[in-house]
Length: 237
Image (cartoon, rainbow, N blue to C red; front, side, top):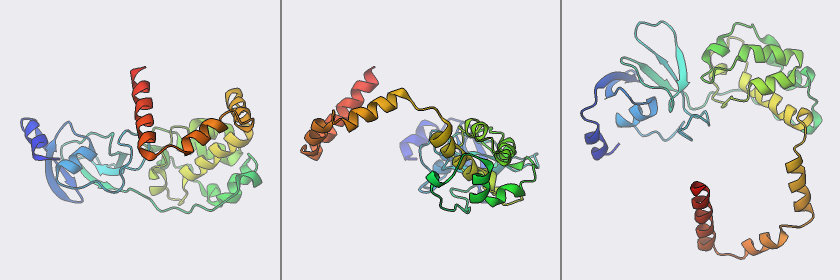
């Protein structure tokens, strides 16, 4: 944060927080990301949308007086006095390759790609870690039963932050299993959208070919101008 920004909030109450064991004083209203940058650090890794949608800014923290390790997205979690924080912008997990067209929407496919699924202890640690309040343990139970629809629908809020895998004693990556379930659901079980089918037919019939050819001849500056006007029109609606 620049000097002007610091001067604007100099009358705000500052509280102590710890990043990687070192103490800093930051405004009590800040999120973890804001506090991290206010303390002089650059958030160059593990930071994406800053709006709670991408899951890139996973954080682990402890609060004085509580023995629990807590989790949250750094762009959404407000700091608390004495909070001790670390970031885990990426948690390494095994993610095997697969071809969705060679799989079927059932437990056999999930178990074939992710055999560790059946090591699940149903301990509920994954659910406690989830910043999106997904019942991850239940999703794993549905996965083992092959209930792809329930897994897909219940895991829609997942932002792939990896926190569920970070504490799993069976070394499972639930978020990858839930992602595969959503892909299987979308390919095989979700009813087709009439609007999408209609638009695909329009494209195949060449209704947009002339416009696409016209766009291909426009220089980059004109394209930028057209895009900015389009975005301004959307905001005006």
